[in-house]
Length: 282
Image (cartoon, rainbow, N blue to C red; front, side):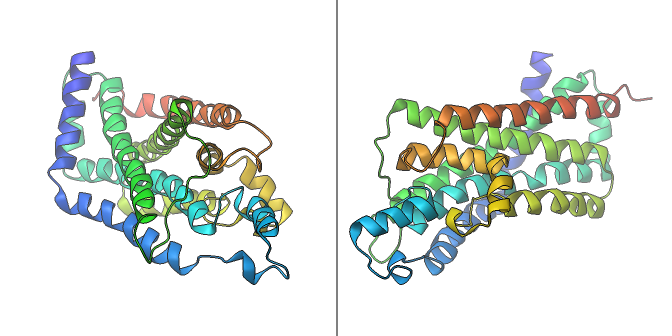
């Protein structure tokens, strides 16, 4: 089983590497969001305060941006979670197109077990959003040193533990949504139905998170929903590691634990739903 898993994973990674258009698009979209959206919607606390003293601005940042020194830094970390989700959208679509061309049926007809087929696509599909998420962090940090652009301003002391927690949040979030969308791709047979389904799931999850919305501008009911949203759990982990814990009721390990529960639930659901779909070919 392990040999088949390695071979199929290598095949999926090579397919990705041989598609430069997809790589270019995946890299371009985060750049456009960070340069245009983040800079265009940058919020200045002085516009909302009658007496914008340093203490008042700091209190505003804690209330509205969960301790981030400015909206752009808040937004840049949210973009990491946003990218981890959106970069997994096409993993299921690739399965559907392989079905239409008969490729998926031929793979299922090989001696490779169903677990290897599913696992290979999951590993390859998770690798891309993980790499893109770290690319977003690196790019936002780089922009901080470019004159005329906003960038990610890290205000907390970041050590090995914080880096490990940030990496764990990215891996868990990417793996969770890669599992979900891969499962949809295996269960659904037409691209139209697939994209309609993922939009029905993807958009409500992103729009009820605090990835992009300032926390302080949310109504109470949306804050409650956002507190349990897996995207919010991931970005809260990263923000607390990068900006400090003053605006958070729990340490990063608690948010990571809740995110791990979400991921485990999606993996178990995927195993139940896919086991029959990837049964022996008649």
